[in-house]
Length: 80
Image 1 (tube, rainbow, N blue to C red):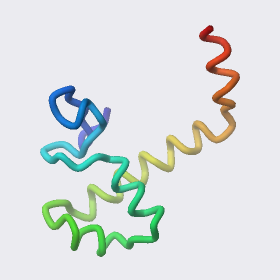
Image 2 (spheres, rainbow, N blue to C red; image 1 turned 120 degrees about the vertical axis):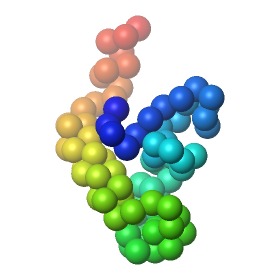
Image 3 (cartoon, rainbow, N blue to C red; image 1 turned 135 degrees about the vertical axis):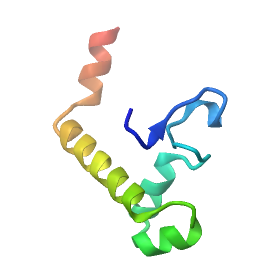
């Protein structure tokens, strides 16, 4: 993964989390989707920092761009 994301089956069932925390990466994306500002996220999770949030946003944006033209049903049908 990246320098700030880890997955450990012993932590939250292996969901990707921010390294050194039990904060799921998906939670940060959810908060952004709910129009939380970076400052509001940092108020809720003061042990994080702006660089971590910005890095997660960059990773999410890149993933979204890479997957935007993908048809999930086509991919699944190739696996059957």
